[in-house]
Length: 517
Image (cartoon, rainbow, N blue to C red; front, side, top):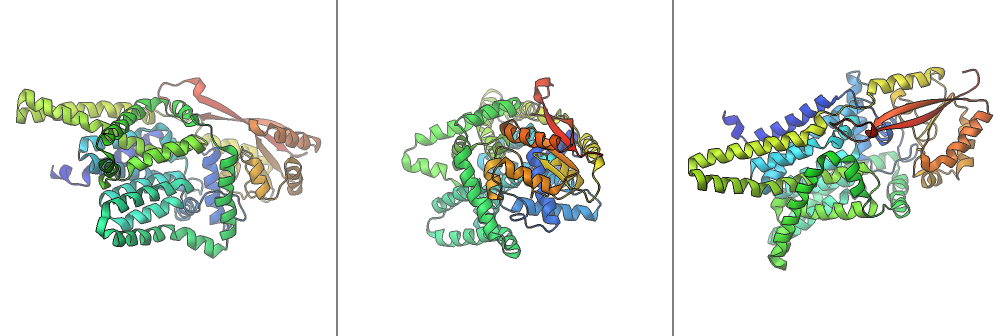
């Protein structure tokens, strides 16, 4: 069985475990809800030829929607629905992330056992499982490029490092952290070869951002991109900055079943920081910027600071998950060394080596059971089939050419593959700044816009923070003779292999139909 010793064998094994876990969770079952539906809509808009920075509202860079639209185009060749096609690309990316996670951890710890612990930790994050299964998210692409950049840094392939860093920036704006960490390692590590290495890095970075530059140039939407993906996120960050510690509360709520993984990672990173601090300033800096660590020390600090200052929700945790898995693997390596030393001391070289392998394998197996349990036993509260049936019942009164308007319920658009007459205006916590950007001045303008569409169906999700607008819209529709019905979606807020009714959130929609519908 020589293939087991091949360099590609265990990364492939990690990717296979990831595919198995995702298949077990149900690739075709996960519903598409809330922000996940938002990214599907953007891909559909691109596929229809709509410039997303003028005819829709998007405050992300374009790489995620572009990859999503490309997945939809390929899916159409095989009669795969547009809302489902990006999911298959997302699953493949998730498997690739598992393989890269193994490579990154093996390069840092020089131990296959520790690397396997890191890969299993990443695969086992239950919330990441639902994230992958729903659709192709820009933050999942960012996770991929984080790991690719880390492995490239370890191997000092600076062109590939620059490419991954550039691509990370056009996935999500805070992806610039990847480029900063990689550049810092490059400057520290290359010495006299620094100019040549910087040139390769810069060339790779240019190639990485090229898809965004080409798209914005071809569609002539540089100004819209500047307004919506640069200025708007900055303004909303100042307006809606998270309170320090909010991300730790989300950690308890959405990642409670993996809290041991976070604790082990904290021990690993804390131990590294303490050991580095005892080496003196120069050697400490060299430790933090060592290429074999792939920039993970800098990313650990960077993402902690970012989440403390700007954290908005559980999806913002996704980019830090590979960093958590890395430091969990780092913490496991001293355990492997301890077992090997004491086994050989007790039973001699040969017998001790075999005994050490058995003990370490048992510890890894126990870790796998814990790490994978959450994702393995996950079942959604509502399946995609249930969602399709529900939305079909809502749209029965709307003909193919009738207007359907949805606020905070983009699922209506993506399952039916209909364009939003509002340019996809979500009624969420960003409503007021978004309304300003698209030229609406509050609820009265929103109401006039709605009546101008003469919609056959209006769906409003009752977001508590916009209850004033919800009441205004609802009363106006009832005054116009629309009838109201209530529809409920059931969402599992986080993974739980010990089912708890409190994990299920009921989200109400108000559905309004015109007289005679």
